[in-house]
Length: 442
Image (cartoon, rainbow, N blue to C red; front, side, top):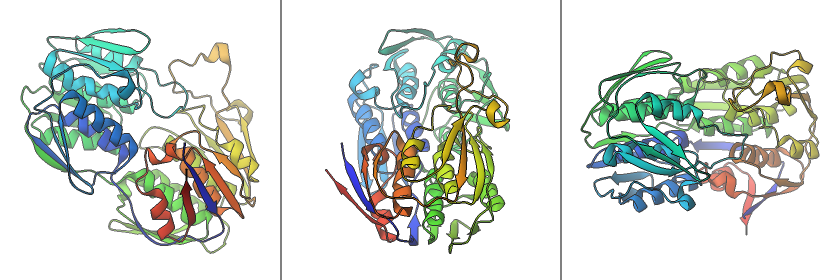
């Protein structure tokens, strides 16, 4: 387990470039295995989650070659097995996406239950609904999911709840199913559109008919392609919040405003100082107060649940009372214990206690039996933060605690930093280039 030492108090000033999107590349690589030709990706983030996926590709018999620091070649012509070992596949929540190219090639697949961040349960019933709708037999034991299908037939897939990875799964499998598939209540995340664009480059036929309706016409042959991964919008939000809480002045390169509209709207309501020109965002703060806001997370085009920890931190540095209601992962507020130890005033309540409507996007949560979850953070600011020992529970919360330590007075030790390197490329060196006093220790 790796730790990070931070001496807070320095404004973050300078220019930083975002890496390619983690949430895009981890679905694009399984799609690349649909073809037997070279696929070349540009703007690939060098992150530990990707390393685990590339080990899966190599174990399956695929070719992996780095052509440059962020340029990656994948070739699936050598794939020779339909099984992914538990030790590898259980590390990432996206591992089940590899079932698609395996079923395409072999008519069957054995994949582990997914890992990833420990943020509440991640139910697979939505994936099962996709598989069964297309004619796939699904079985499972405690560790593995077993898929068997010699023929897939297009169908109507109707998601009761919006689901990002469920939509990915539906697109990947229907890309080679016989006939036409219509995906209703499909996710609108820009990373899904990356997948659509990429599969079409491979020779697939995927079309977003409406914002939440996708049509897929199955193909039997896929070709190689070159593709540039979109910028990571989560990184943009991370560095933007870092600029504001440290009273910094930062230019962030690699920004797509269309992917950040809900965040930009919040910044505008808070009267934060920022400007976006082309693919650059400049954001700064000189000690002036910002306005409190009330935020509810939602699937795209709403405010991302991944941004919830970061905006909660920012609101601790705003005078007045704000609320953040997470309707996607109700159990994602564990990091607030550490923020409160640093001096923040964050109280977790149920939606009803805060006068809000109960919303739980988790199909496995029994509201009648368990009662309302404490899915609302009530933040009272402005509170000075003080350095202390911090414990990283997951990826986004970990990045949030690092930024909190940079905004705090004094020294902090952050335990479990490997959870952050899973999804942020060169996080320490990028922050240091902006003036952060930060270093890693073993």
